Structure formats: C-alpha cells, structure tokens
Image 1 (cartoon, rainbow, N blue to C red):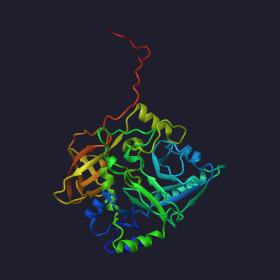
Image 2 (cartoon, one colour):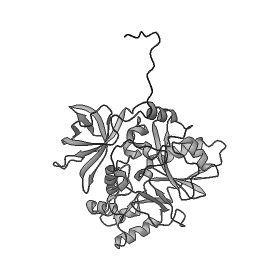
Image 3 (cartoon, one colour):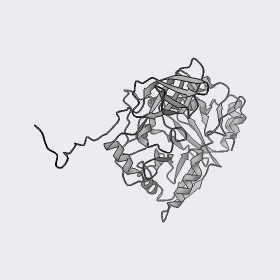
Image 4 (cartoon, rainbow, N blue to C red):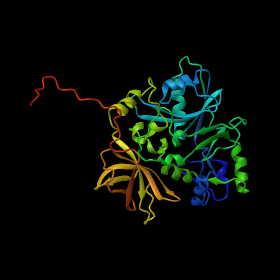
Length: 368
C-alpha cells in the first residue's frame, strides 16, 4: 500500500523492494546529511510487521533462529536469522519485545512466507502470530525517536546491534574502527494512522524527512547487509559479516547451526562482501545485479548501490573469496564499464577460528 508520505510535495516514489514509500523528497544530498546528523525520519512503512504473543514466544523463536533470545526483556531488541537446513539465509528479523508480545520487522517480501512458516512450526507452543502490517508502520532514524507505540502507547524502538556488534557475535572486519559505529539505526513501530499526521507536519516544515535512498547510502557505507539486497539463494551469514549482529556463536540446536559452526570454526566462506568505491566521472550508478569483473573474468555481482553525500557513488558487492584484496575491479553496466576500488569487509583469509592439526595418513612412511 502507498504511504501518505508520498503526498508530501517533492516526493519521488521508490521501486521494489521499497515500493510504496519515497525514494527522496527532491533534495537527496540534503536529506542524507540531515539523516546522518540524526535530524530526519525515513518512512519504512513498506516493511512487514508481525506480532508474536504468548508465553512461549521467545523460547520458541530462540529454538528456530540464529540469535539467543532467551531473557529478552521489555524494550530489548535483537536481530536474528532464519536459516535453511544447509545454513543458507531465508529470512532476517529485527525483534523488539514489549513484555507482552515480540514484534518482528521484516522485508515486505518475507512477511507472508515467514508468517506461514512460523504457523507451521507452532505445534503445541503457546504462541499466536498476527500480521500487523496493515495497521502498524515503521519509521527509521539514526537517533532515538519519540513516537507513539503500535497501539498508541509508549514508544517501541528497535535498536540495531550492528553499530557495536551483538553479544555472542563476531566480526570478520579488520578495521580499527568499524564504519558501522556511525550507523546507530533505530526503527520505531507506530500506528499507521500516524503517517497522515506526519505528512501534514512535513508539508508544514515541522518535521524533516529523508527518503530510503538516503538510508541506503548510509547503510552501504556502514557495510550493513540487508536481506532484500545482499542475500541470494546461496548466502550464508559468514559471507556478509552477519555473525556480527545476528548470530550467537555459543547457541546451538537451531536449523542451519551445523553450517554456522563448521564454517566459523573449520572453514572459510566461498564468497565475501566488499564495498566498492566507484569511478564517478561518468555519473553511472550500477544497478544491483551488475556483474563485477577482474581481468575480464566475472567474479561477483553488485548487490546495492547509491550516491553517498561524501564518498560519491558506492556499492556493496559479493565476490569470490579467491579474488585478491588488491585486485583492480570493474563493474559492467549497459553504459560501459565502471572502475571500482575495493574496501575489504570480509577478508579473503577470514577463518577458520580453530586450528586443527593434520593427522598423518594411516600407513604413511616417514622419511628422514
């Protein structure tokens, strides 16, 4: 459904996966600077919202997903992943509990499939699942928001663990200061009717708005993966550095856990996430899905791209682990090749976490 904020003067509609909200309101760079400074709101009412109520909600969800959710207190938030049996990512969930129910914010395309899966997995558990997307909307900012909660009461905020990393997680990034530290994302769950009032306030100049393009640019610069863009049918958390915020490595007994533990402790992910600083001289911004090449061989694909207010055109891409970290890359577009410099997110040599000694082969002859 289209947001009332699309009626704000200057609003330009976004496309999938953000259809229904504004890409920008006519001043993309200004909006991005305001958002980065914590002065602007982003309409994310295209996201799905699920409500899980019942005394078993947290223990049950903990048993299904990658994050430790036991002991989540009212107002606490977390991020977790639903994996398939082979450890591939199926859904990502932003969770905040209000003491009575757990609220899940998910990508629009995940709402129905995830709700259907959770219904199938309830068995005898005391949990009820509601899709509240029709009457609850999501607003984003890079600062705390004082907005009414889903039922008009106290604010209900999800605080992104990406900025500092979650307890029990680990990051593969080797930078002294992680760029995620400058991305303190907050999601507020509000009554959908609040959007009409916000549109009036924005038109009157009393509320500053930024489009999803601004949020995407800052997300890319923070190396923050998003399920709607970075995840494909083969993605595992290690490739995207998602062990940083959405996986508890001391927690077991969930679907896909064996792959998580094996790759972390003994192996290396087959692909890795990189940030690309793109040549902006031709004003070409590659679309997601554009091939990434090294020495004329395709080695990966662009997953997200945007124009950053300070860094210019930037992108995230998933490339083969074997690609040298100093390799010169180009992105192929319909308008020609665009040179790209790598910023390493997941190092090519990331892992294993445990050194396992090689055992001699039976019957091997030792030569001196």
